[in-house]
Length: 122
Image 1: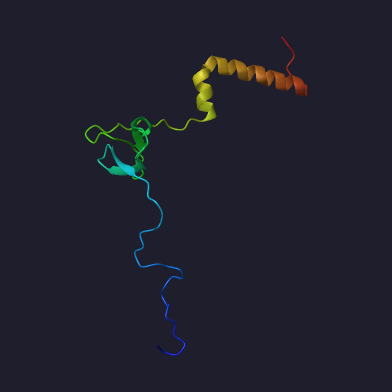
Image 2: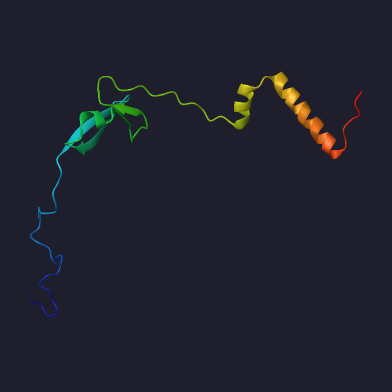
C-alpha cells in the first residue's frame, strides 16, 4: 500500500456489499397504463391493495396535457377549452345594450349631482 493511501478509498462508510438488496420493504404494486388521443402511453403505479374503483379512469397526460384513459382503443376526447373571459365580457352576457346605456346614464347623473354640475331638470 502506498504511503498515505487509504484502504477504503471509494467506499461508502458503513456500506455493505455492493448491490445490497436490504434497502427496505417494497410494497406490492400494480402498473396501470393510460393512453391519450395521440396514442401516447403513460404508466401510473398504485398499491396492489387499492380497490379498482379508487384507481382513476382518466388522468391528464404529462406529455401532451390531453386526457388519457385506460382503454387504448377508445381514449377520451379532449374537452373543449373555453377562452379566458374578461369582466366586461361577463357583464355583456348579462346586460343588453339598452340596459347598459340606462345604467351608465343613471351613474353619470348621480356623479353630476354629487359634484354639483347636474343640468337643471327640464
